[in-house]
Image (cartoon, rainbow, N blue to C red; front, side, top):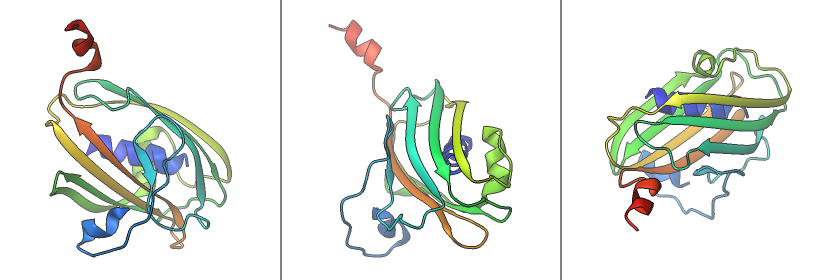
Length: 176
């Protein structure tokens, strides 16, 4: 949960097929990848009214590795203040199993990336390192995060598929 919350806080502050996660049938169209080196994509929705325009997100390493440090670098533009009462609808699935389905207070969570509400208009850049627990089971994780301001205006909506497990690239190269 800490990894998910830190990522959401970093991505939301710096800044789909999600309908099937909520048991609805939807017709999906091509999703747009978030610029940068990460598995993030924008949700399959209209982003023209989003309060934050995410310009880039980089993860090091990408993909994240269990038992290792993950550095998140994100840059975006905030067009309206993000205020107390903003929240994140977060769903994390492991394969088909829903691990987390919660609504979290964004202003509480952004403390994880050394920010606080209100977040004023302007360009915002964040760099944050988080430890990924070595106990993260191998498998495919799907993350959906819809971020909404206190006045119910969309801040952003992101989704990602991250696969943990298998040999690290450096271990594989050693076998050559």
